[in-house]
Length: 204
Length: 101
Image (cartoon, rainbow over all chains, first blue to last red; front, top):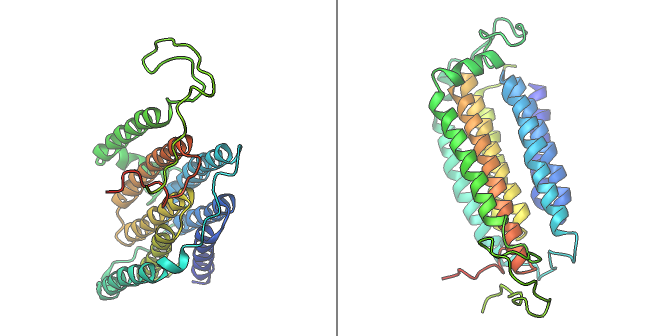
């Protein structure tokens, strides 16, 4: 019980830290703390495999992607111009939206028959590692993933393929210093003045 | 741990709306993407808690799917940020309004 509240305070604090920082690098650190605390929550909820996956995939892969993009965009001139602070203008609609939506969720959470759920009490909290009979273990998860839940697993593969193709289409081409045309036709290297001007994407 | 499942749901709701607040208030697209990750993780917490309440690992499979979707979404979102940054050297979700109707 004490562990739950300590972890809950850490989770909320790191989430608030994530969205309140000025620099994206600090936000990534806050998000890392958030993911680690969430992995601890997964372990306390008998989902040990998901706790490991949380650390490996989120902290290892997705946060690395964020850090690389921050490093890429910050290498030249400062990419994030200091504009006027728009927070006062959006504060009232943002607070209204969040409070109304939170009211709906809180109403649903308070009126759901939560007490009637059969809360599981594991007989052996420390089963053998990888045993298929322990709830949430790697064996249990894998057996479900490859037998009864095979369709979500294959949908996962399709989603990853779509993501790879989409990323290559969106960001893979259009390098400004290219000497090769879009369809592989070699063309003359243009000087800096001949290149198409960078259009500022402002409201016009 | 003898914690009622509603505590986890309440914690998940609070974390989700911290993410919603981040998406609405922040202008830096990287932090907006991180707030979306916060919302996905709040949903994951609720899924794992309910999966534990009914001793049924279908929720675990769904969390696996959500993690995959989050990875794909982060990759494509960051690719869009990079592509926009190449065109206009200013990345701000309020300034990138060329498709504004």
